[in-house]
Image (cartoon, rainbow, N blue to C red; front, side, top):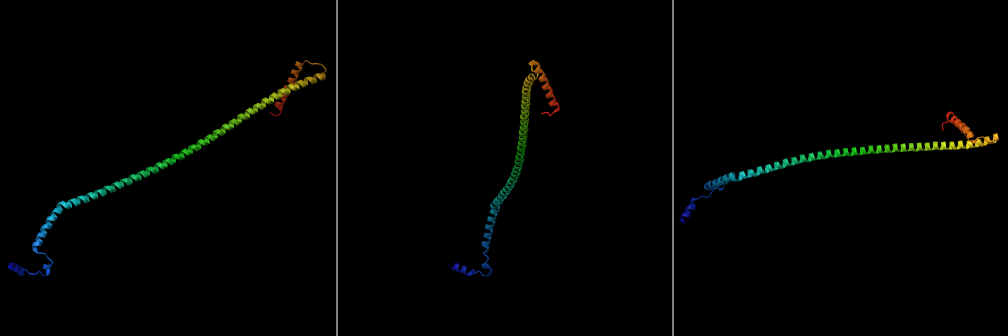
Length: 187
């Protein structure tokens, strides 16, 4: 125990800078431990950390490139959509215009057919009028011939051959109707 007291008496109490700085043997052992830890950190932890950082940078770069590619693809799809929309509108306008032209052609065809039908109806009516006129003229000629024969028979007082009288009257009527159609109006 005495030694301990001597040892304690020989040890001085630290003062000044010795209060802040540790003992030399602690500094040596601390430096050695630090070097060992630093060596293992440099050989194991730092490369792993660098790999992790590099992988993270690569994944960020890949995500950025992927996003740019998707953006370019979306822009291309939008442009394609706009082009298809424009083509669809142009096609719709073309179909509408063709429909208008077809409707106009149908209208013209219907008008032309109606006019043709109307002309045919007018032509048939004129033919019927002409036929009725001819029939009426023939009936009138027959009636006039009969009246003329009867009148001539009364005036002459004797019976004239009916056949010869009819031929004379018919010739006279033809002559009169020929004068009426050549010299008069063409009805």
